[in-house]
Amino acid sequence: MADTLLLRALKGKAKKLNFSNKKLDSVPSIIGKIVSLTNVELKNNRIRDLPPEFGSLVQLAILNLGNNELEDLPEALAYLLSLQKLHVFQNKLRTLNPRVLIGLQNLTLLNLNHNDLVTLPEEIGRLCSLQYLSLDHNHLVHLPSTLCACVEMTELHVAYNNLQGLPLEIGYLTGLTKLHLQRNRIKELPEGLGKLLKLTYLDVAGNELRIFPTELGKLPLREMYCEENPLLNFTPVHSVQEEEVLALKEIAARFVMNELKDRFSYMRKAIRHYPAIREMLAQASRCAMCDEAFLNTWLECVHFIDVRKDLKTKNFVGTIPVRALLCSYKCFNRKDHHFYGVAFP
Image (cartoon, rainbow, N blue to C red; front, side, top):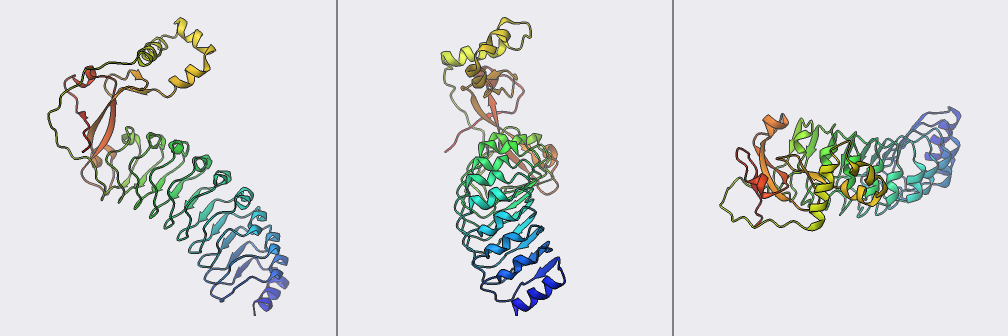
């Protein structure tokens, strides 16, 4: 029956082919001759692989392989240079063929929900046109840093996995508008999250977060979900301050960074010859009180922001703890601020 339908499609130079719910164990190789196809639906079958001839569908833009029995991405997909949308949800994927990922240069949407993925290959970062990636309901423990090379991405869904954190390079995804991370095991969000200046939707419900990154307040969030996290409570207690002793490296770094503020200083000219030092100073942070730069020694504090008022979200009412870094006890002891030292039980 499948062969008969394919012959008809071949004669009619069909652009769309729907073989969903046909109880197919395999796809006939004759499909490779229907080079006019731009959309193929193969969901809800028992397909374990695709024939090599499938790679001849050079005009194919949309392919749905959802709810089949694939354990890896078929090799034939590597040749579908026009493919823009690929659905492989609810299969048995345990790995992603790196060769296939390298070939899908025009892919904008990839749906891999409900599979058995534990890791992603480094080559995921080669999907240079990817805008939408969904990995919900897998077994991922971490995401490779190369994923952050997909700078066209606007939506990332990684809910219901076993993630313990995000790549430090997450800030490179500057076009990201929606980030779904609910129901993982994330203990801390990277500071790079504050660079996602187009992020309007953030869901981190059901994780293990205690505090949010320092620049969360800069994000244009409209919806935020963070329930079922062990967030820090606003419970001030008296504490004893330790005497502050800075390392020589920290003292020198702060001196150099202060000198660099003067555009006419000798230090500005001299540091050009020391790339290693420039790279080290590029990792510096700024004090939330005095705005002075510091390198490795700081006082970690917390302040509580009103989500509805400060972030202007539409769905959440209440306060959340946001990390703040102070350069010294001198700043911490200044009056009229709302920063508190952090005590983890």
